[in-house]
Image (cartoon, rainbow, N blue to C red; front, top):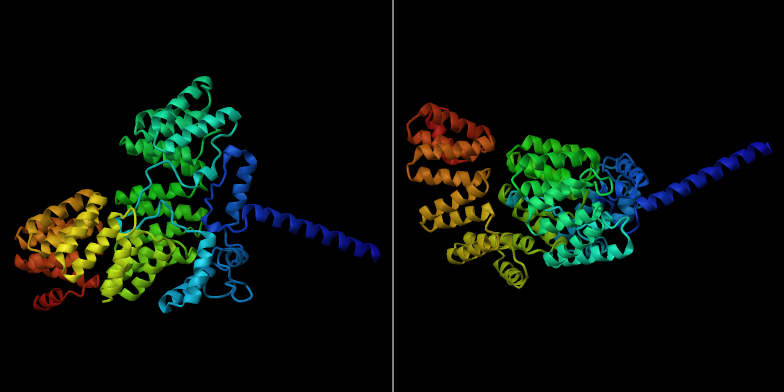
Length: 555
């Protein structure tokens, strides 16, 4: 009997040791005070040998919803480390909502009620864990941002590009890097070329040299250097593939751009950024199903990555599926409440499609709390103005104008504020400022066109709409406005062409069918007029002219 008890004690001791071991491993993989949803899953890769690859695989496996409550997070991590809630007070396991949704709802109520106690606690948590706003994040209102540079704010902590270099050479390479970051590219180049002459086989020095040539916009030279070292195991990484892709894109070699990103995904499937870059490329090409396929492939690696759901939401919006767009943005912010682009896109969607200004304002305020950027503040101002709180809008406008680096998006919002108020002079001033700040934003040209049209400058408006479509050939709103211009000018053939291009891009765009039905009504083609009016109604059109004309046509 004693031997049986001793055996049980031995088994118990071994179990405790195993548990302690894995807890130590867990703290290595999930350090304290670090939001694991913000960790790039490539962390450290082959530069640090096979052991690192093994840890990467352990990390990926650990993302697979360990407590099976379908929120993608382990409660001990989600509650104790990220959201600072307690499983004693709330545990998502077995509940109908996830940890992320719980905290999202908590802070929505704080903003809606202006509960300073809850807001203060939110600000403490936010300060502790920082902001999650990926440089790759797509923003619906500007058609999607695209990272076309091989640099990434997280890379200095992610890769050791001084590995195996002697200490004295590390110093020189770091000096060259500092010069490059300061914009002194020639000095950086001089140092790197000098050290390379003494170490001609160093792939790491060549990588830095290629990066500097890229910064100098000598893309051909950078690409040549990158291609020399692409198969070197010391530097082979998503960053190198990203550099190869970026230089190829800059040189107009789109097939190589795609090839290198696909190779990166194949060789380093845990790197989350490459999926976004490739999906963004296909989105801009209007190959939306291909973009969705790539993002879903990324979700197999990281099933709770807010960037992917946000990007899928943008694509759903481009396809005209507003319900799915809304659901996807909500998933983005419930998986990571601090994800500012998701809140911003929710705000724009509530405002522009659902005419739900109160929810739009709440989301805009949350976005600005997380990321106090001019763009987010501009959206807050626009919503306050639309809700009739002009005093608050003016107060925040002065705050915005005192900020540095005001971008086109913020000036665009101020332009829309005054356009909505009928103050065309001030609206035009801000829209022109927006174009000075960012002359390649299609939606600003479209908004300027709307203003010019409202002030009886239709031919100038036409040029603005054309410019918007030139910048973004997939911009359906500008195509609609071009069609309306041609309709007013009785240029029906051109109008039909614009509206049909819009429906080709978005078959669910009811407004385009409204206008096509009206044109054929004017042309006395009852059959086609009836066809397009019926299509518009099937897609949910509430246009009174469409409904009345369809009745007259006998439907």
